[in-house]
Amino acid sequence: MMRHLRTQTPLPAPAIAQLHAQYTQSPDLVPMQTMIYVHVTAIEAAAAANHGVGVARALDRAWAASSSRGYRASVASAAIVAYISKLKDLDRAVTLFEETAASGVVPTRQALAALVQAVVQRHQRTRFDRLEKYIAQRADAIVPDTHLHNQLVRGIATFRGVAEAEEYVHAVMAAADASTYATLAPRS
Image (cartoon, rainbow, N blue to C red):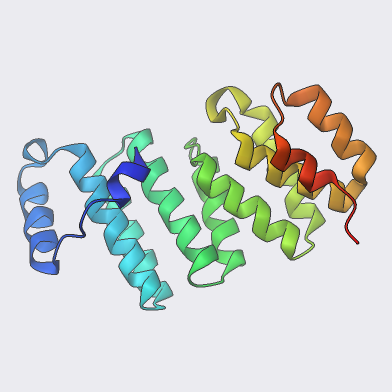
């Protein structure tokens, strides 16, 4: 769903303000998908401007707009990815992830893969172990895709060794692809 929303032409700022005003007056008139798009766009715009406080404000507005778990998962995931990719602020991303998870909302696979990748790149084993445990506990809700699995395999290989990563591939991944085995290949 989010991939479709991101390929659309961004709305100009007056249109975003008008939709937000319309939503606050009568939430039933604005479709949920449109509001997700509006809030994700606001988060991404604040992140592109390197404005962490703006991301937090946009996220607060978005969380106040709806209590739907799917809605909150989409918006929080966009903020997590923005903190990691644009603002390079892993601490805020992890804090937001923990707050989101504590509220019972499961972030998207894209956000989880970005978190796992960032944690592994920064060699933070404790955080990796917590993320791996979270993903394993909620595997039914998350349904890890190849990209998320590959990030987990990379983390397991980094922190516990290639042998344990191979065990994970054979035990958990039903259909490992070439990219997974490339992750396990020795680097020269």
